[in-house]
Length: 164
Length: 412
Image 1: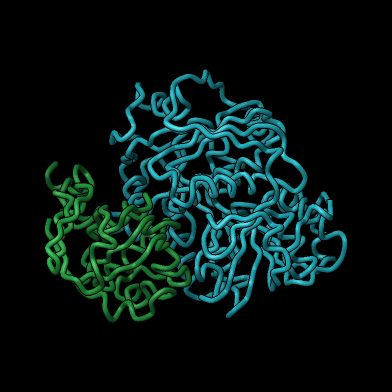
Image 2: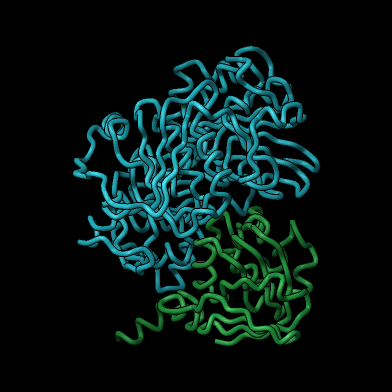
């Protein structure tokens, strides 16, 4: 899978309470959640998120198990998230929600607004503005299969169809 | 074999290697009100609410309970309907307790695999279960299929040596570990914890350490079952299962916590690993104190608070929430509830309360709280510019008494 977009750069430890505060967890609708994504840190986020690729530091998505963290980013229109490391639950939630995620040390090598291309199977981030290629961790196996299907619900439907 | 390897080998027939992707059946699956409706919605999208083994499911209403809004009530109505239709016995209504506390008190056993739609599911590691949180889709699929997939973690060893000194609890051990390994520092690893003097580090303390292993990013943190585990299970379940584990094998990393060297610690805003001795933040003025949550809402926490708050009325607003009805009853019978209410604390039971900033004490703009819960993230307990200091129940109670952060040891 290849995804292209404009970079939005954030720091380390973007936690789930930042990505979507608990008061919005009474909703699961991506459109509603998307309006409040990153609200405590960056209230303008929903205005600039459409088609963007988030470039972040360590421990992206640390904190709660709320799947709405991934749903909110997707609902805001985020195309993918690249981070130096991800919290385990967030990473799974992103895959299960069909939000592309890639572990790569891109922060510092991509500036806000740069055009970025990511290649999930190769684990590469290409900064199209500077030409630099950043090597990360390829996405493989079951996680890639689920993501390619569009998320866990779609993947399970696909598997059921194969078995029928 | 390490304890982590033992737990996997017991289920899979042989110990897998770290990094392997394995499929396995859960022993226990759980959700609460705030994640539960999402789990059920995902199950409906997957083809319907069908549970592989309804006796392996535990549900508790704890997050927005009692319901503070019509929407929260509506979520509960929706879950109750499904709970009835699948014939769920292990259903805990408003007030019975926080999911993780109920799993600890009633359900989890050593070497089990426990998964729930909440990140603090790790708490059941206190009795040696491999317990971790997952999102709504993963739990929904697990409940329908009776299996899930895991990346096998790399085990590390943590030893807890000696006996705790005054006003030092499990909270200080895990805050110390956060200062050493940092937030998410144990990503991809599971921690096997060995206690040198088992009876000096009781189940309440173990539950706090296991609970906040989530903040360490650990896939799981398990206390290797010992005489304290056996005594706890005999007390709460009537019997303890036989475990034929003999520790051996190599760990990728080893760390020893010397209890005698620890002092009361706090995690200052806005990061769980911004850990300092309480003496460094003495004098910070406090608006609200929260004693409770799945981290520190157990009897020893309520007792610690009562030991300090018996000295007078609290100057800061004080909210105390025993984590389950069982803990509340014990606190009532021991006289702690009387002490806390006389000190001016609002006391209730069995709700997550202000921990997630949902209800029952949301922080206003610029307010400062000392909380025994597990997260001090930006805006976690209310307004974006509010501040949360995480601490043990002694420090929290002392802050309530004086209206500012003080070293609680002067009261012991």
